[in-house]
Amino acid sequence: MRHAHAVSDLRRETTDLTVPDAPAMRLLSVAPSGAGPFPAVVVIHELFGVNPDIEGVLADFASRGFVAVAPEIYHRGLEAGQWLERDDAGRKAGFDQLNALTRTNVIADLQATLDHLAQRTDVAGAPSIAGFSMGGHIAYLAATALPFAKTVVLYAGWLAGTDIPLSRPEPTLDLTPGITGELLMIVGGADTLVGPEEAATIDAALASSGVPHEVVVLPGVGHAFFWPETPAYDAAAVAESWRRIEGFLGEALP
Image 1: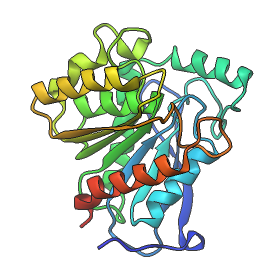
Image 2 (image 1 turned 30 degrees about the vertical axis):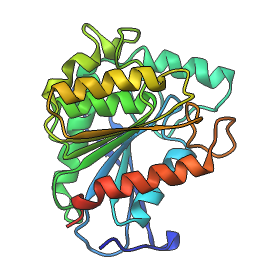
Image 3 (image 1 turned 45 degrees about the vertical axis):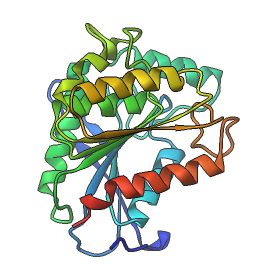
Image 4 (image 1 turned 90 degrees about the vertical axis):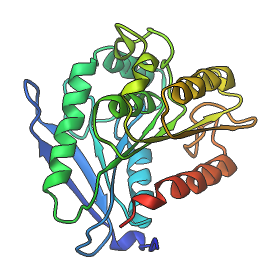
């Protein structure tokens, strides 16, 4: 049974991880109080980096009984602890960082994250992974290559095409047969980046590969609906997403 933890009881820390042929990667961790062990979830940031919104998601997971960690995937291009504002300049800088990412580098980052979690005495079981937008794409990619038990993909862009380096040489969706765990995808029905048609394509690819999965389309909801103080924010959609995520990850709890 999941136990709620007061935010003041959560443990927050940062760790610098060694990644081959790259600068150290800062990992932000938020965990429940106590020795555990707890299940772990890796949270992958969207375009703007490990910002206060992502730290809030870590706290939300930790309050639900998870050790939640967020690797700074932009560590090859930004300083440790640096994140980008949600404005035109931040968006441009984010796309510059996104377009510098490669599959090899991202998998190396997540392997280092898994190695770190394997050494922690407060973590038990195979970790899960969750990602938002760009981070959802990375989570999907990671699920095809690394032993994540469960993957949560929130409105992942560019999975079915080859528009960004992460989706080349073949579309990331073509790697679906490599997924060994379970997958939950959540997307808004009014999302102009992903949308219900692409969600249906992803659903079909998962089904044909025999991946245990669910694709949830939230009617009338736009892209990046998770974040307060942004135009697309939808509190009801966030609540429904957490309900789905809790149900999906519940069996990961020891």
